[in-house]
Image (tube, rainbow, N blue to C red; front, top):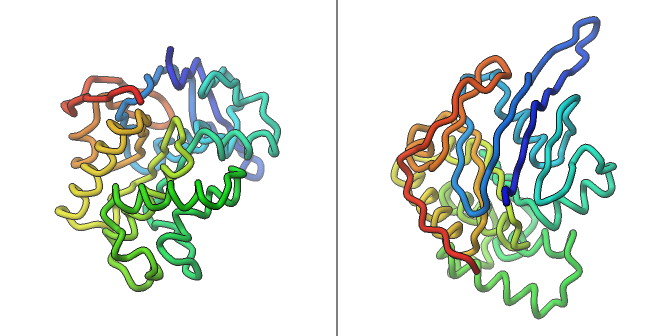
Length: 237
């Protein structure tokens, strides 16, 4: 059973008098617990596609199923609820809340969406702080930690709700090579431990090199799909 199934999806925008075709006739499948990259030049449609898979927007045409749900049938409220329960997001600029500590940033999605008891929230936060090796920084604020540490916090925050799917838009863009590789290794470890699917939009050859499936976009079309060199060691949990 696929986690994501896209069939002939398209996305058009109205820009003044002009109708812009951002995505044209994309079809693909994404399996559970996989590491997938969408690559292509700026303007190829990568971020638009991630927004569709993440239920931040809806296709103009075609069918898109995520976690057994037809996303075109979700209204705004249902879409927000579905995202909160099924999808995590990692952004290139981290998007941490500056007024919250590291631990509070990780806990925030649990308070926002999942109605969990405080003890369970604390347990999950502690477990993820340990997993991303950020326990010593738990009480620090985002402006007191490095870029690599911020990205590790962002990974933990994306995973704290135990989503089936994590969408990462250029997650290593602001990191040096060594830090980027550590973050990629962390995400693969998280994939193996939690059986989470990671979908990347990226220009970064380091990320592409770790992907199991690489989809290449150009001018809103799917140019090709190929197996990558990234190893797969997913295990069910």
